[in-house]
Image (cartoon, rainbow over all chains, first blue to last red; front, side, top):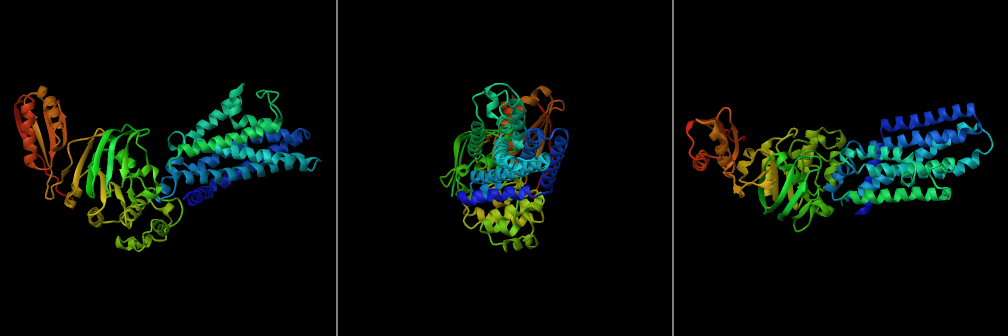
Length: 231
Length: 288
């Protein structure tokens, strides 16, 4: 039963993402990313890739991830969204997880393509582009996955899926707060991976650990979604 | 094919409705559960349908918990107050997923909807499709129908009642409604839910009933509340209300003699207040 439920969930997410709103979000994300990369490279060619990536991954892409989560969940919340499947004998949990995985995949793809656009615009053919793309894409794709999971978790909280706003606020507040609390949100680790060690992370905290932390955030959010949706 | 509630308690998220220690066994037949949303009517429907899990106690359909058993839910006909169709596919796809032949649409004159996308149906059409699917299941474990005669597009109430009566002859059919009268000719068992608890024992709805409403005008306003409270505690009455400034108590009952018997008892309990007049209102006849 789990496989058809999972497939139905993925189909549900794909169906809901296939709308004009998603096209608008992707188009504006890419446009904004390209504009930022271009402007940064005009100001400072050497620092342009890092600065443009910083702006994109800390503001533009999290907003895009939030918009995708809202598109998939709508004003229903994951529990409400999956009730129809419960009526058809499918596992609501399986459907929710299928929808979540589709959301994560879409998030990873959008983040990776946006990062490629940013780097292309920031480097403008300067050497080091290829190596930076190879180093950045896995990190950024992981960021897209972690943010997708983070917001999917939020979609199971509060009524009508309003938990995604709560998760956005938590990410914003804790991500810029000092101390160990900031380690639980994706923002801290993405900044760490893109920019190097920010002040909020201990000096001994190496980038691979942030990559693992993002994977952990994803795993915890997935388990939370599974626990918060009924069979 | 029984539905059993065992000391079920629960509260709806974001709503005032609460259910308190509800126990009851529903055997095959048509059961009308009468109440209002704030009495926990929809909450109880959601719990029996398996959409929600009770805070305490358990609900069993054929001995299994519907909230934990997708295979059981697949065999339950469910129509809640809001439609819940898949967000993709056509009406025919939906019926196919329920193993209901799409030709069933023709029975209710909905054949033209066969290839319509379900996400394009308005609420009344979506409820109609859900109801048709629910009433057409091959071997349903139970039927849970919230207001099956309301907010439905293009279907004659008589056709729906015929289908409910057919199913109800051998399947436990729970109809959740705020108005019992339209279902009286199905000779159902009536269960009344008030403030989250059962109000009185289940009773048979009189097939030839004509509901009556009486206003009792009292000489003394002070006597209104005691009389109103005494009538409100009488399970044989359908509804009781009172208006102290107008010194008036209103009661609704299934029969005139039921109303008079209840009034006599309540007058006794309230210390025999002086009645100025007893005004009958236009009876509410059966709607079909």
